[in-house]
Length: 171
Image (tube, rainbow, N blue to C red):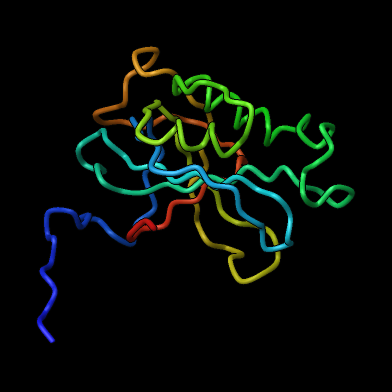
């Protein structure tokens, strides 16, 4: 068996770190319909940092939990009236994606689109295996050109939105 070639240029330099609180330019790698750990309908976003260069290539995940206790699969239009769906719609609008009739079509159209995002850090407080872990949160999204990705410095404040940075490969 021959050995695989290592794509060294594709491997991020700063694996294992949480993104610093900052404003970033992201590219949408994927938006996909998945089931949460509680078997509820959710849309999972995977975004790659383009700017600033110091974090370019790093990945941020964000979850939009639509399903709930009464409607686990998010089939009732009332399930789409919550904050997660509003955040998803804001991402779609700010990244310039056409709103298609189905989630799948909208998610497919989103690939490669870009947006600016304010990212903060938050310590997980819920009981469980991640309690105490510092995670990233996607606080707010903007259209490209509406706000610049920071070259240095930080954005103050925090938010609880469900975005989590995890280093490593996507897919």
